[in-house]
Length: 378
Ligand SMILES: *Cc1c(COP(=O)(O)O)cnc(C)c1O
Image 1 (cartoon, rainbow, N blue to C red):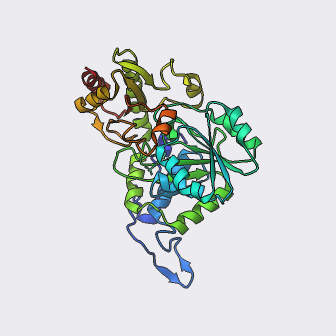
Image 2: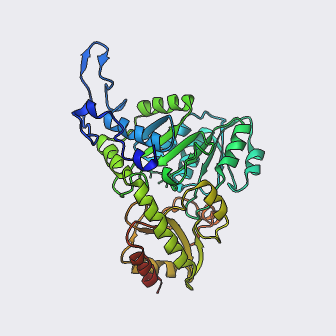
Image 3: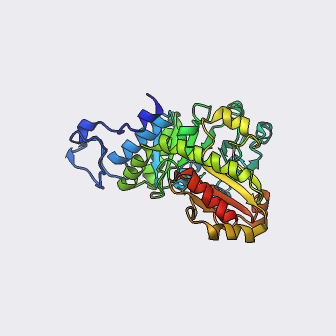
């Protein structure tokens, strides 16, 4: 079945719910037992809920995974993966992670004697060098936030395989429409479904996907035991958003390419970060492992923080807001917003300057977006 058809599949057997075409919101915390130990597959909605099952089934099919375990946020999904670690374990991670992921690593797991080693994601050889007998996973995010670096998943999967450690990929920025890490050799995928997957800036959620039986069992157990589950309404909204994922992604890519090219030629812009530009250092790699370059565009504006501030103040169509991946275009100032949790030296090391602007390009008409950027830069 093609991707565009998979997103429309209901994720449940229609006959089970009065032949409804759309999966209902099963707003029930508990389920009837027919007799002692006899029930219809569901007992209590932390352990399982039919709307959540439908979401998990659809997401698994999109990522070509045998299992999907849904969580109440991307951070809860990230936490679930890290929950398998014990004191003394090590994680090797590609630099330039989502700042919330870095905060979870360093302020929750760091003090529990988990060691995080950060290396340049563009250099698979350095990963090989830092693996030790205590390394339990390799973690990467591609494309990265906010520089849109692209890392070679097959090359890093080969390093992980040789080192007998699983490769975890945060696929939030690409979405399964543009990139399928399991097919490229990764073992575990984490998603913030808040972003492209739900796509409408109206719900927070996360998911872990895998083909590995050990990981499936661990994630299911953690989902039920720690309990950071998405509610049925959130699962419904996410399922509803998924149906237009291919349409949205195609428009995000088309609009972002147009904006990136406009910015690239603009005299007030000193640098544009977009893997769809031939000048981007990972352009060829992105072309190889992704089926499109995504909807995120970052750029450095000439004139420092004052120029960046003026840009945000003048925007009329794009919203000045956190988050990304929705139909509405959003602009953010990484230094004071998405990456505010980093220390100043961490931000400098990550290349986040005061004059950097990150755009999450929505699906509005590209001419209106270009006009907004043009007048805001003026
Ligand atoms: C937003 C985001 C997360 C965290 O997800 P939440 O749903 O906000 O908890 C993790 N990774 C990436 C790449 C993100 O963009």
